Image 1 (cartoon, rainbow, N blue to C red):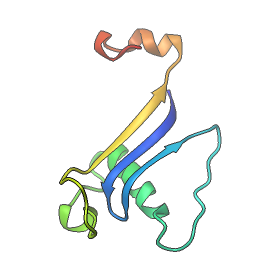
Image 2 (tube, rainbow, N blue to C red):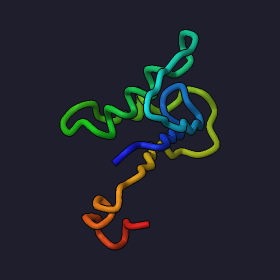
Image 3 (cartoon, helix red, strand yellow):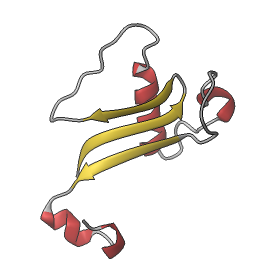
Image 4 (cartoon, helix red, strand yellow):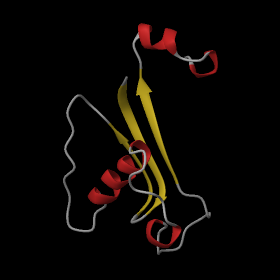
Length: 91
């Protein structure tokens, strides 16, 4: 599986962002631009027993349109990987 897009909604300093991924990626930006927020979101998504979401820490401190916070990751799979997925998750 290859990650092709990461989307964050109401997470730390980020209201809404979608990041298209290529074979190599680099997060570059000014201080407080959200680089660490993106990495923390990925750690929360992947690390079992690692970083846990806390509304007090991870929900934005600015005005938002809703009370939801989520991380969405889109993948590209090979035909062999598609065959191993449950039918409901196949393309």
